[in-house]
Length: 171
Image (cartoon, rainbow, N blue to C red):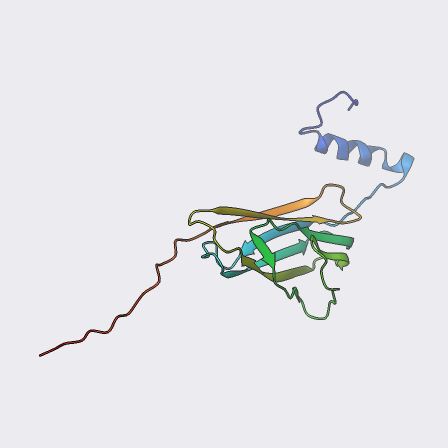
């Protein structure tokens, strides 16, 4: 394979080449974490002034630990961080977040899955149908491309306030 070749579909050939020259150059092995990031929300159609909870799920299915993990979330102006940030499994300690950074310096072991949950408030006065998108980004020392996950909210129509008036019957 030359540098000018299209690398799509060439991975089998490249592996064959490495194995073919294994005796001459020694074994070449490189492993890294295989991370996935998903994001969810407990109520995708909140009314304004509601509180919703975001849940992040981070899984390392690779053979190596992910170190110096940084999880950041820049909230749009229509959302307010309420805290606290909860981490599962318990026992991993996190400093209080300084937004947009939710966590820094975290290690996610090989085959480990963690989840973070945190509540946010919805701003007052948003019109029904207003869409809000929130994105989380994850980086670590071993993986060069950041991961991101987004979730969308749509402000629901709220019921008008009810007024109860007494009924007076006269004879």
